[in-house]
Length: 233
Image (cartoon, rainbow, N blue to C red; front, side, top):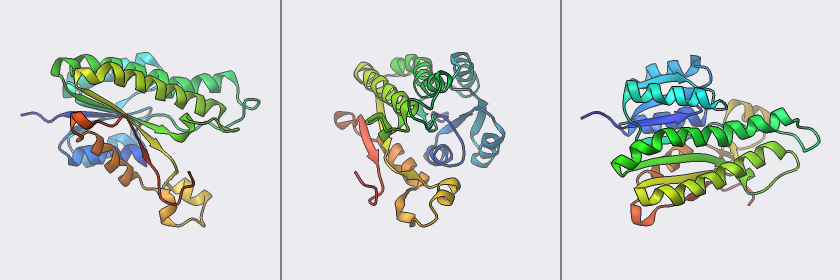
């Protein structure tokens, strides 16, 4: 029996890597999607039953081509984790239209196209998992998050619409809201005085995310939060 396939969109050091490793440990063959494949090819070799695919989440044609290749080479996708979408900072007076549009393209348009590519097969099976990695910026617009907050808010609304449409088909659509700073070398460098407990560990986020795929259907969650205890909320 062939392995189930998980596609992780947005694979780099940090959350993407941790998510890929967690699904791989659970017995999935993992498709690693990233704009460039240097890092993801090394990770694929480490994981074994994994493949790296170049994919620019801001371009619908790139997303469509990547997912078509995955299905052809690995099989139909059973789980999609959409992790693409790094922060873009600036006030409404500081950002430009191109920055605003690119943030929306990566966070929202890319997620739409990815789901459109996996949903038909999931509907035929009557099962599947689609998980978005979101942010608390989707709930409030900070002065410096004019582009990022609006893009994440659009993604959150889109995910909720997808959940209402696809849950009856047996497809669990869910959103993980990250509230905190992810434990990465760059964040450690920026905040050297913070203790380990201040940060969201990618491995722990991956565990929380994977847990969504094991929820019983009669008690599915749509939105959960990943927050270290020291984060103010």
